[in-house]
Image (tube, rainbow, N blue to C red):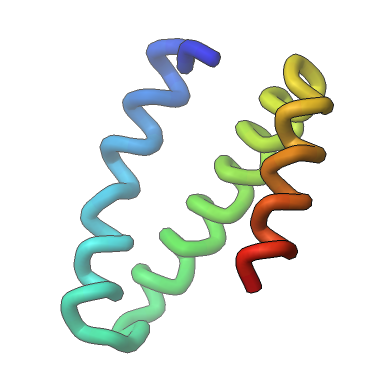
Length: 69
């Protein structure tokens, strides 16, 4: 699934939030928490769009994830 330009730019803008949290191993600032909320919302939208296009692949990936646990 190709991302539209606006979604791609939004992900690029939010990427430093993930990097900061991963490097610190904690959420240190309120702006990081807000950024994580934005990331979660965007990821949810992307997942829903991908799921609408590829429901079988999502089901298989979920089954593989359960088996690997």
